[in-house]
Structure formats: C-alpha cells, structure tokens
Length: 498
Image 1 (cartoon, helix red, strand yellow):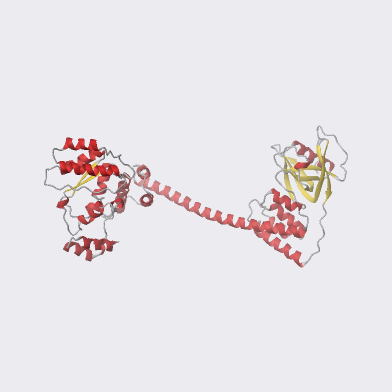
Image 2: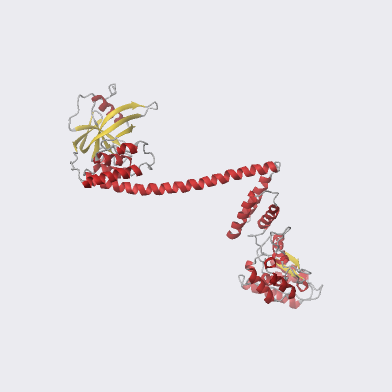
C-alpha cells in the first residue's frame, strides 16, 4: 500500500462503520467481482475518496452513474448494485491524472448515501451468491461458455493477448461469467444488468446469449474488414503502378508534358457531359490509353477516337426561333420568286411551332443547278437561328462516308454526320445533304442504304455511327453488294452483321 499525506480540507476519521463504504461513482465502466481493472479518477471528490480509502486500508464501493453528465451525483443518480473493491495500487501520472488499480471482491446493494467530511459514504448490504451444486447441466454450460469465450474474445478489439489463457485457467462458473462480462463489447446498461443478475444459471445464460450476438457481429465485421482491405490493397497497387507508369512515360518522353496532355484529355471528357453509356465506354478506353505505350500502333488511333468523342457537342444546343414573320422576311431577302417553295418552308415551320416536340420531317429540294437549293437551306438555318452544315454527297460510293470508318483502320475518321456536328458545335444544326442524286454504289456498300437511317425520324434519334463489319466476315454480302444495290439485299446484310 502507498502511504499518503493528510488530505487537505478533510477531517481524519479513524474508521468507517461496517455497513458503510466510501463510494467512488464511475461513468464509463462496470467493475465485476474477481476482476482487476484500472480506474481513471478525474473528479476531486473521487480523488479524495480513493486517497482516504488507501489511508484507512478500507475497500471502496464502485457504482455506475445513471447519467454520466452529472458531476456531483446523489443517491437517485446511482444504480442500486455496485461492487466492493480493494485498491491494490494508487498513483499519479506525470500529466496529473490519477489512476487506481482496483480488484472487485463482492456485489453489494446500495441503501442510502450520506455525505461526511466531503466524502460520499454508502450504506449497503452485501449480496451473497447462492451456492449452486455442480451438476452435469452446470458443467455443460460452463464448458460451452468457456470454449465460446476463447473463440470470440480473441477477435474482439482491445482484448488483452493473455485473455484466452486467463479464461482457460478459470475453474469457477461465477468467476467465468464475470470475467467474460468485463470484456464484452456491449453497452454499459447491459453490463450493469449482468452485474445485477445474481442467479448463476441465469447469468450464464445471459452472458452466453450476448456472447453469441457479439460473435455474429465480430464475424461480419471481420469479413467486411477483409473485403475492404482487399479492395484497398488492389486500389493501392493500381495507384502505385499507375504512378510508376507515369514516371516511366515521363522519362521516355523526355519530360515533354505527356502527363499534362492526358490530364487535359481527361478534363475534356469530363467536361463533355457524355451520356452514361457513352461516358462509361469513353473512360474505359481512356484507362486503356493510360496503360498503353505511346509507340504502340493503336495508341494514336485510340487517342484520336477519344479526342473526337470529347469534341462532339453532346449537350450544346441552340434555341429555335420559329417566328413566321421573321422567317418570311429572311426568305424574301435571300430569294426572289420561288413562292411555292417559300410557302412550303413556312408551312413546315408553322407545324414545328404548333408541335415543337413532334417528329421532324425532312425537306427535299429538287431542281436543276443554280436555282437556289443550297441557299434555301442557309436561309432556313438563319431564320431558325441554327447553325448550318452542308455535306456534299456527289461521287460518294462508300458507306463509311456516312457511318464512319472502323477504329481499327489506319487513318479512320468519323462519318460526315459526326464531322458536321463537330464543326457546327451544336447537336441540332440544319443539315443540308447536297447532290444526293449523284450518290454511287461500289464494293464498299451502298451509301443510300445508310442514309435511310439518317433521314428516318424513327431511327435517326439514335443513329449508330459504326460501320458494318459484314464486309470482312461475310463474302456473300460483299458479292451481293457488287451485284445489286436493292434495299432488300442491304437489309439482309445489316441483319447478318448484327
């Protein structure tokens, strides 16, 4: 025991009555009989209480508060059942905190609380545990609880390493229940309930039940930690490899700023406001590009593809101006005569004004060269306030000019539709497909068949700008394309490619 000086401001008393004990209210722990635990003492009254108990070599009564926010608890603020404890050691740490090593000895029931010499004294009665004869049922519960505790408490965070050995050496069922209760990670209210459970069989059942619930939680938590650790390890590994790859690429490029170019391309893709499906595919290809050596044959092709995707006006539109008076004025300013054509254009704009969300039909201008077909398209775009895109189809005999070339080809380019969109900078320009009567058909396919999807309002809302692969996989389709350009044979070809 440690000899302590006289406590300032406290009157010394020679003894405490046998039915009274010096109380030490605690807020964040429950002490069980037979268990040794350190107690951090912060309040001045509790410090004086422990010092007085050490001076008198008397036990203390450790009682849990009902409300931990109360600084000076009274009888109504304390639980009815506490633990008598011997102060095995008392010390003051260099940081000024007071610590007491206490060993619980017996449960007691608190009757009254009195204050004497600035100390809390509790009138109590000891709780004697009923002797339970050893029986096969008790031994079975005891052994089952011991085995379960050894398996579960090893997974509990903060459990001492020697806890399993300590549990293995316990021979008393009551001591086992109290020891396991001490290290159960459960709320304080549930621990207090275990302390107040005097019946041994009932206490063993409660401890086993809570231990079973804790086992399920710990197993699930352990599984989650393993999965999370696996994901973190994978992510960290990918991060380190990616950083190493960037450094290698920087060294190979002589510090030419390749990483800055890749960051700019990523920023352009993010800024493009791609739809979900297109964004998923674009960033998948971007991840491939990051891992690819710039000297690879596919590098420039893949980079060109991503640049085209980032430059397309996915979300940029122009506001339509459907004022018929202004449209009539624009048409009169740009063209003399052509009254029937102007009236047809105004009727078309009137229909759009009445039903702006309807399906957009196409206007077809027919006439000899020089009558103003192209300039009429420009006037329509100026009247509506849209961008104007002209695509000349004279002499085109390759279907890829409409749909675009496959990315695997050297020098692959998008089709005229996407090139016009990229040049216009909006996704709703006025397209003028000029010289359609001069389209040709060859071994590369029939461009007129591809134009069906471009011009049909039912299909062009989701126009697929990928070339058919049937030329490289089906000789029958290629020979059919050379023999005829009928719509039926091309439809069979497209079906075969899908």
